[in-house]
Image (cartoon, rainbow, N blue to C red):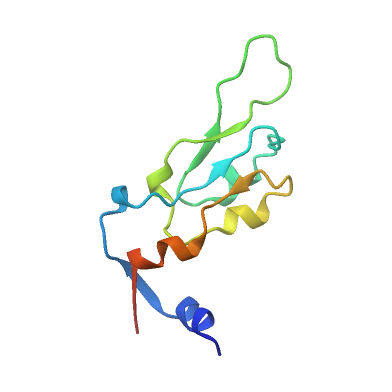
Length: 102
């Protein structure tokens, strides 16, 4: 078992206050198809529909409304976005914020 697999099985705690850790998703509005899969999937209410533009008949794009509710190092919503509109910064840049323990 490699080091990354071991970290996945271990518990972790943050080394800094959550509001000091810029880990949260970003949405490419050009790719977002307003399918709501991120909204329905996320248990932390990070996503919401943007305000509807007057005159538009389609659903509004999704937006990040609670970025600091996102769990640090979680990127599961990126995988469930069929449109590929969700992205995260490199996980390696955020390992310093997590302390793993058994």
